[in-house]
Length: 276
Image (cartoon, rainbow, N blue to C red):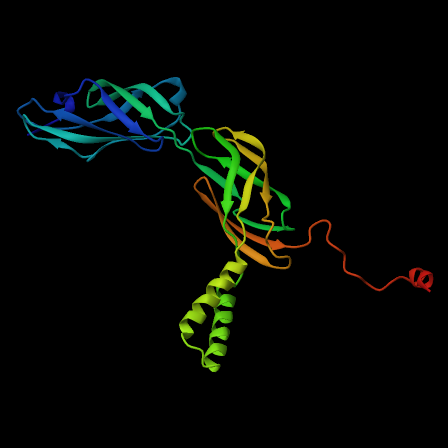
C-alpha cells in the first residue's frame, strides 16, 4: 500500500540552502512514521522575501520521484534556482513538502560574471605610446564590477619561434661546415639569443577612468593600452589579455605613431621652382 505525503515529516526544524543564484543546494532528512509506503506529492516555495519575487526559476527534490518505506527515513537533495541577478545575502523562505510548510534559510553567494566585447582587439601605435580603445562591459552577475587595472599581456612577434629556429639552424649549419665542435651548443645558443633579442615588455591595460558597472548594466568603458617601449616599428605582435574570466586576443602593429615621418612623394611644381 502507498499513501500520499501527508504522513511525511521533516527531521530538521529548518531547511538550509547555500550557493550561487543559479544553484542553491541543501539536504533534508524526511521521515515516514506511517505503516505504509509514502510518496511525496508536492515540493515548492510558497513564500519569499520581496527582493526575490519574480526571480524563482526552479525548485525540486532529487530524486524527484521518491518513495519512502514504512517507518523509514531518507536524505534527499534540495535544489533551488533564481535568476543570475538575485542579490547576494541571506533570505527567509517558506517551503511546502507534501502537505506541510517548513521554514527555509537561503544564502545566495556572490557570483561575478562579466562579458566583454569585442574579444579580439586590433591595436596600432608607437613604442611607449598609450592607445585608447572602448570596450563594452556587460555585467551579468549579481555584484557590482569595478573596472580599473584590467591586466597585462605577454606579446610575441608573429612567427617568432619559426624565424628563431631558422636562424639557429643556419648558424649551426655554418658552424658544422667550418668543422666546429659541439654543433648542438651552437644551435641552442643561437636559438636562445635570437629569442632573447625579440623579447619585449608586457602590454598593460587599464580603464582610463575607474568605472563601477552595476549588476545587469552595460557600460562602454575607454581602456588605455600602454604599448611597451621596446617593440620594433614595423613589426606585428600577438598576445592574450585575461580580464575577469574572459580572454581577449590582441594583435599589435607597431608603427611610428602620431609623430611618424610621412613618406616623401613627388614635389609640387612650385616647390621645385623654389629649389632652383
